[in-house]
Image 1 (cartoon, rainbow, N blue to C red):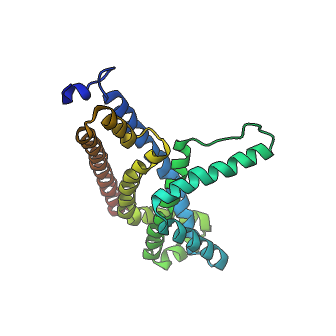
Image 2: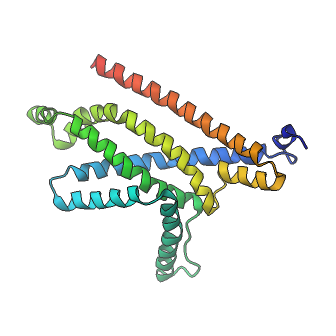
Image 3: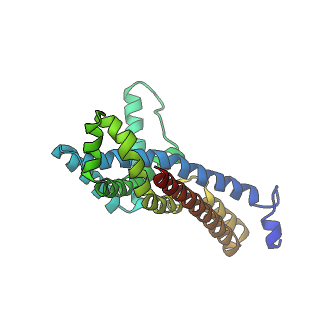
Length: 236
């Protein structure tokens, strides 16, 4: 069979499987992003807190997950968390125990890694905002939360966007690592097709192309978001 035959849709080709892998990869990255952003934001708040315990806990967290290889983090979450949840569920009366699938484990692991780096991006953005911005909000009678939401957050997002865009691209690439715990993403489907057909170069080239497509589309999206943020800043 030639290359076009291998890449056909239907029973004779592998495009159906690779397309499903593309959807899984994209879904995993999109599901991880808001969780990682939220965790990173609160970690940054903890790092700039006046409470020493919060600062220490946030520093320990980011040191661990920035220091561990992403693959090791995935294994620790998938196998370690799996054991903890199973034991806890059995203790609560579930005879078979509760298990987490590869998608959930991958999302949790990638969120840990993403949030540790995102916290540094948010922290740098916080430091770039003059203290007078906070004081102006308090002088207007705004509460701490209102000041954060209406004055600080819009500036924070504009400053952090370039760094977060880079982290998103890294997150997209890191999703390929989840294939090692059985998730049927682009890499796993391409690997299976390569082993069955003995056409490794063909299918890994297709995987390469798909990741590049995701990266290019992401770059366009973030570029438009940054331009919109700058226009909003000028308009304000």
